Length: 310
Length: 279
Figure 1 (cartoon, chains in turn orange, blue):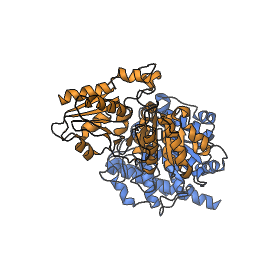
Figure 2 (figure 1 turned 180 degrees about the vertical axis):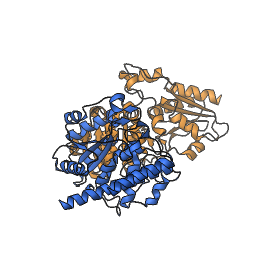
Figure 3 (figure 1 turned 90 degrees about the vertical axis):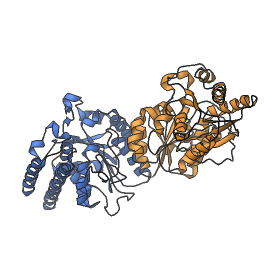
């Protein structure tokens, strides 16, 4: 039945969408068995281009394919598909507004064993800074599937940030996904958490704990970091005693920054971030151990909410 | 033979006219890159007035041939030729680099009719050409893709990534044209970063290599013809050129890479170019 793996869901979604839409082509930089673009390769080998360990060339080649009407998806680990290709994504793809889709796989700390060189803590920030770039962070496998379909429909460059590890399913299969929309997963009246990716389930756990202390925490999943629905963010924050963001990313440039930018003209909003505090990642034997080390926990969210609520 | 001589004379005249536009627009803009625009002018004139399958009435036609000016700073040469071909009015050339102009300091495909790609960050154009050539083949189109690179630009590692992949995918509809004018911003290529022998490098990467005098129309035409006949291999045309070609005081002078002529220099250049036209 349904997978809990976001990357498997990603690969399967490409295969499913590619069945009818022959314009979808997939480019890979020698990590197909990790990004799961290999599923597309098996289904449609003639529309799969192994570009090997040359990410910059892969990104610019995708630009050329887009200029002939194709819908190229480029794949690598998030550190490489955003960092190593940044100039190509900015100069060649985004200034020209080309219809290239970028997959940042094994994002955040999710490649726990490989350490700092392979853990992307700033990719949301890099992508968010590019005018016209859509930035998407799926919470689970179901949302990943819906998101890939939306990326195909969307015209223009779009980035999807995919966690390497299995995550709990929080999204109903019949939910409609729209780029730019916020999704409330738990209602609350005292405080609100804006979270995405792995941190949404942590926020829900924090809400459970706080409920026992009579603090009512609203939990909002923000799968689209850009374009951010600013009026919806302002409305959700209005009257709350605490606004906390939670992300598997540096507190500089990611979801927290985006929410702070959205609320910048609102008076008296008590705001705090849960995220990585401007340091690189490190190797660990397990994912849970690592995100705990960086304070990406339900406890950290609950603590920040309590402090602000007072 | 007479027809050929006539054609070559016609192309030489177009190249001369193109050089005048280059000097004029950079003079008016008071900044820009004349040296590398002049060095590639004969090749660009031949491409647009003889080789390319393009239609100014339908600049977006799907099966058109495409050109990527990977050395985007030399856009005056492309702006000039596109205006001469009628993609937009020649008067527009006077707006180069002005606020609101379609003619940006580096070429923007969203603004300029007939321009196939946005460029400016060196080293990326050949990869884009690989994608376009792929796309054309996938659509069973006869389109050919031409990418113009500088010799200094070959320092960018991505050029060689693209070279690898074009050979792997047997893109015989792709032609790289390297403007070997031997100068870059900081000096002579051989001093800044020696990469000779260039021909052997392209050959080693699996390309058909044609070496020509980039100012000899006959050789340029022959090189394009050789490229067209290639089966299963992309072609690299290594064009031996003179930076600043056609304006004696700009020739082989490093500073004219990115400097605009003043009023006197502009007049002198025109005088020389007009003289050339009479020949």
